[in-house]
Image 1 (cartoon, rainbow, N blue to C red):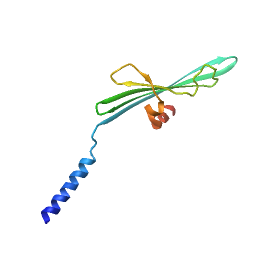
Image 2: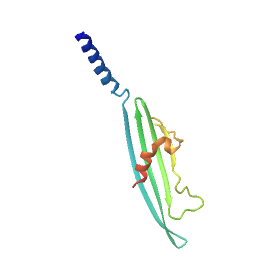
Image 3: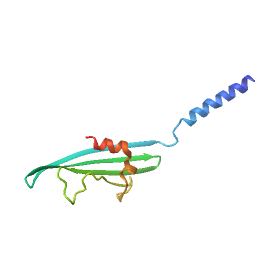
Image 4: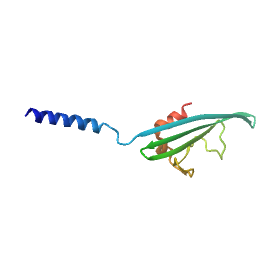
Length: 117
């Protein structure tokens, strides 16, 4: 009976250790930048800032690369993309990007990180 209890205890510890081990390695690399230009328009002092960021996400053998860009102008015109983020994504091994939803590509945590500069 003692060996049965020891065997059950050993198996449960082994199962607990194995189940806690990640099955696929995940790595994340995030960059962010902010650039602003200042100009005079119709006698008004204006600024336009661009918030940009990248996210490289590797899960196992799958790798995606996403680009985030958002322009914010103090005097928006009718052609501007003011306050509308534009995102695109590709495989890490390709340079052919497709437009994607920013929330899906980056998630709220990384969008907040990029925009808080």
